[in-house]
Length: 108
Image (cartoon, rainbow, N blue to C red):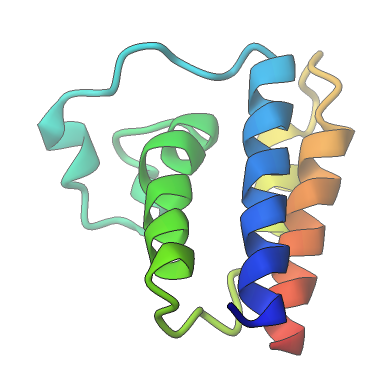
């Protein structure tokens, strides 16, 4: 397995751990209709943490497992910064992890 896949797999696990530590990890998935949104980040049907858990993490994990080509630019960190702006959650660790993921994908 190439280095990038190992790096991304590690970052995905760390991202999940951040979501869990912030108590943003949900036990039950959203309705199938919510997951079928055609909007970027499913902004019309999911919160950002839900999108990360139920859309992003599974898709990226599958790409890593199958060694499929990875996106070169995700840009999720700015979205997270905006989402958590003004929030009482201490989401800096989550946002930092997303920035690391964005940077690693850009480097290829």
